[in-house]
Image 1 (cartoon, rainbow, N blue to C red):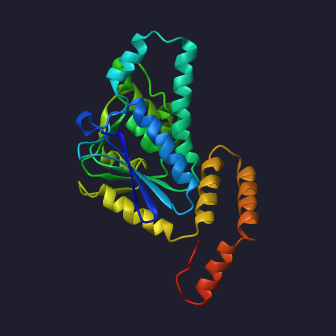
Image 2 (cartoon, one colour):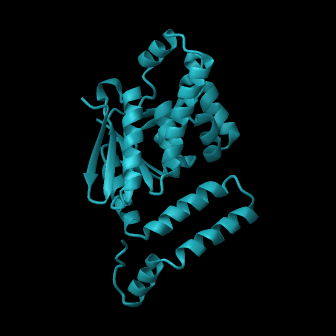
Image 3 (tube, rainbow, N blue to C red):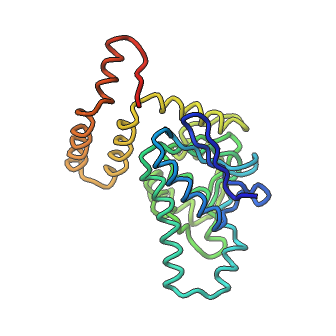
Length: 261
């Protein structure tokens, strides 16, 4: 059974972490398949959005499969090898942020450790009311090392991030919504359905505009206001001459839906 399922639904690609018997704990095979699927979606002009979810209703993902991690550590890899593997996995999650298409996490059940790091790398997050979030790494003597310590403070600030990581608690979805970690809260079982509705709503807009908006928003968080405004100007200089804006304006004037290609 494949550790990752990739299915097409019109203009959408749904990637499903598929180890429900292990609460969709991540394996190296899953990481490799996710990398390939993201690259394929990025290269396919007919794909307008990507959704990442977990199989079953118990978990989005419980993070890295600790039995596989223990096996890896038992082989006594060198420090150089450990850093290489970590860097490759960090780069995989960064590729989600850099994909020129929106990526939405549809979250049911447990979303902790590497699973939460994966969700934080997505652009938007839809979660069920019974979902739970947290970073349990400190309980086994490590820290979130796939972007958790870097991304979580950007959402919630350093004090809340330290609380979550230091205590290793699990928090309810209502708390995650209050902190801005998730965009929408839905009844259990509806996260994927709602994520598809959201993705289709986005897909009805100009793809170049969405790609540039994603890039400008993400980069501006580490820029001065002056540099962010300059990047915004550059984005518009790329968009203005293209056919997408012309079609959008023409459709508005003709009172019809635009036909973006």
